[in-house]
Image 1 (cartoon, one colour):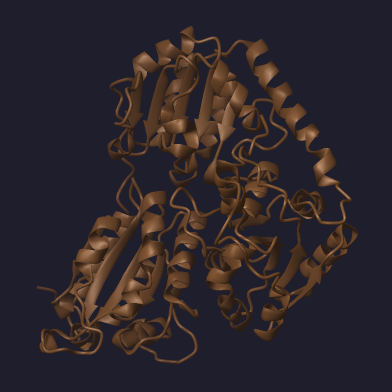
Image 2: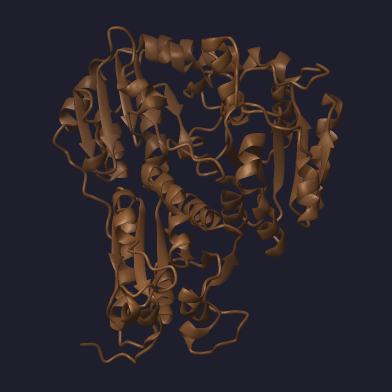
Length: 551
C-alpha cells in the first residue's frame, strides 16, 4: 500500500512521463483522456492554470501524426516520446505509426483511452479491446484497471520503451479508472540500464579484424539510439576501416571524413572480405546480409540479442551496450587493420560518385530535374540542420545527395516505409532543436497523407521549410510498372498547388516552375518564420535513383 496523496490517473501518468524526461504530450483531443490534459496544464503540480504546466500539449489533426511526432521526438532526443489518444478510432488510427516505430526501434509511449470498466460489454461509445491489436507491434501493451496503478504502468512503459532494443509501448486506461483518484507510489528515477555486452564472440571478432585485408563497417541507427556515436568514431579511427552509414547513424562520420565511403557501397560490398554490421538489421536495405559473390563473412553487432540476424549464418556476433563493444574492439586492435590501398580506393570511388552528380545538381532543363532542387538546397543547409524525408522517389534523391554533418539529424520513415511521417517528425524536430533549420522533403504522394497537419504547425508556431518534389504521380511505382508491363496505371496525380493548401492553413509558400527560381524560393522559405512550402514542379519522366549511392 502507498501512503501517497490520492490523485487521478492523469496526474499519475504525467508525473511518470516527466520523471522520464518527456516534456511534450502529442495528442488529438478526446474526452476519454481529459485527465491527462488537466495534469499537463498544471494538475500534476496541484495548480490548474489551464495554459501552462509541467508538459506542453501539442494537439494535431490526425492521431497518426501525434504518434509520428512522439516517434520523431524519441529518435531525436533518445528519450521516449509521449502520445495520448482517445478510445476506439483514436487508438486504431495510430496502428500504422506505432508499427513503424516497432519496426524501426523507436522509443515512445502511447496512452489510449478506453470505454469505462463500469459499462464494459454494454455498448459504450468507442468500446473496443485495444490491447490484442497493439500487442504484436509494441514491446508491451497493458490495460490498467486499478486507479492506483496508472502511474506505475506508465512508469514501466517508459522504462521498457527506452531500454534496448527500443520501441513503442501501449497503456490502455478505462475512462472511469483514469478519472478516479488513486494513491500511487512515486515514479522511478532511473531507466533500465544498457544491456551488458555479450563478450562470447569478441575474441573471434578481433581475430577476424586482424586477418581481414578488405573489411567494411556498416553503422545503423541503433548506434545513435544507444549513445554509441563517439565509440563508433573511435573504432573507425583506430581500425582504419572504410565505413557506410545509414539512418540516424548518418553524420557519425562527417562528409569530409576519409573513411566515409557510403557513396561507394556497391564496390565496398562487392570486394569486401569481411563485413561488420553494427546497430541495424540485415534486411532488404543490406541485401539481407549477402555481400559479394561468394558472400563475405558477416559479423553482426546489435544492441540486444533479439536483434541478431537468424535468417542467415553469421561468422560471429555480439550484443549489448554498443559503446562497450566498439571500444573493446578498438582497444584490442590497437592499430589500423584495413589495407590502406583498399580504404583509399573506396574513398576515391565515393568522391568520384559525388563529383559525377554535379551535372544533375546544376541541371538547367526546362522540366526541372529533381536533383536541381538538392543542388540549390545543399549549400543553404547549416551543419546542424535537421533534414526529414517523407516520400518515395523524391526522397530517394535526398538519400543520395544529403550527407548530414551531425548524427541524429536525419529522419526518414525507416524500413517500414510508412508515408505521412513528415509533419509529425517536423513538429518533433522544431521542438527538439528550436534554433536549427528544419527541412521537410515531401513527395507529392506523401503530401497527401498528412498535409492538413500544417494547421498544427501553424497553431503551435513551429516554422518548418517544406519542399515538395511535385511530379504529379507515384513515380516510385510508375517507372517500375512501365518496365514490367510497358504501361502504368493508378500512378497519376494532379499537379496540385500544395503551396495554396499551406497558405489556406495559415502558412506561406509558392510554386516554382523554372530551375533558376528554386534558390530564391528556398531563401524566402528559410527567412519566413512560418511553415513555408516550396512546391517545385519536376520532370515526371526522370526515374528515381535505384541506388542512393550511384555505384
